[in-house]
Image 1 (cartoon, rainbow, N blue to C red):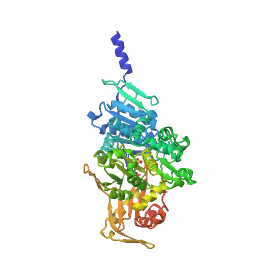
Image 2 (tube, helix red, strand yellow):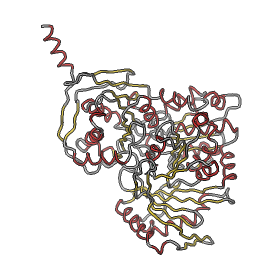
Image 3 (tube, rainbow, N blue to C red):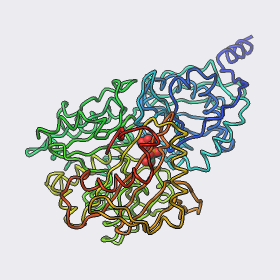
Image 4 (tube, protein in one colour):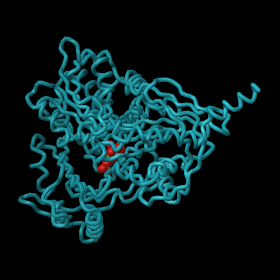
Length: 573
Ligand code: G16
């Protein structure tokens, strides 16, 4: 009888695994970094979320998946919690042995990368649409990172997309319920399984903070932020995921006063704002810095991987300059004193300021397509230490994601060593290397067909033999086209070729105009125009004045305003 009772109890407490029929969707192709759609798409289309999650699991070889460890985190945006509950149920049904999840389902993108590497997980799922707005009317997104902690390579995302187009069923344990609030392990017995499925809820900050403690000199940073001659900082979390990280690291540990952490309570809708750290969407921070009461300011995006750096009076450091300055001062960071510097890299549209430092220091420089995943291979192969993108991403090889808090600590390490203002450090840099003026025009919510047609026509125009050599004049400025192409990249490690990575016009003085469609939107198109021009002498001029002629030329060549009916960009950086 006892045996019988034991057996009945086992049956009642084991979780059922179901296979549910479904139909594919044609539009689940991951973009620059994951699948991003309006929240209502996930909510209203039957099994839209399930299909994509199953496609991720099915893309992993069953032998690797069974009994494996995976990490799950999200930026806390609307739908985060619902999605995590489904992911847990599907992970169990797909043979994953252990899930490590940030408490309340929240973990920044850099922290997920760190935790994947720390626990030797086979990968992780990050629920974020990054800098895109959140809330019921905003965006939701899903990223898949692989065992190196970085965004999945194109071969993997292509496989996920292919599976999503033909999917017929998914596996799920619908009765499995997890408590995301309590730290510690929760174990579940699944039918037909010998080993229990484990969910481990971890502190979202601790492992990541530990990693940073081993990279930077926290004692020196504490002196900078709370010692006798401390500086005043203002860090804007933009109601994204970084709030708890900022408070724990900068306030509790490094002694910065509580009021230096602004908008540091994560909100499902980011307070109704774009959690995008640029001069337009983080204008409150820029305004607050203007009167000079803060020496240093920074803002982060929804999932904590982007950063914007400001000096006193709101002095703006372009992300392209930011990575170049960090490169030039790299030994202010103890980690690099230990590891040495293996290489630098930037994405193609990022200004060439970093190239100058690489050349002077005789360190290898890689130019990759847009997207952090391209840096991961180089880091895994031991060829890259520091990299950055114009899209407010900066990071090192301590993880495989860009890292907003790391970038701020890197800058503070430079300030602690040099004891100069941000503005003086940047101006010294320009005096030493010359200046790459850089601007980006974003035209958001453009009709997709109009944008694609414009890009196609532009490419036809640019590849015509007569284009090279053409001269464009605005006022007394004349630019002659030296090269025009659609950027393609051959990965130096595994020789894969990535085509169609942006239309480039390079002029004889080295100035560049680049056109690219954003890969992070959730609908319509965002057209980006990037302009980069190097000056050795006139280094203290206004960027928009200096780049005005090239901006006019970029609009003339593309006919962007005529085609879209716009009279100007939505955002200028
Ligand atoms: C993602 C990638 C970045 C990339 C950016 C480009 O950023 O992680 O490496 O630079 O997209 O965005 P777009 O295609 O819109 O120009 P995030 O922060 O959105 O994940």
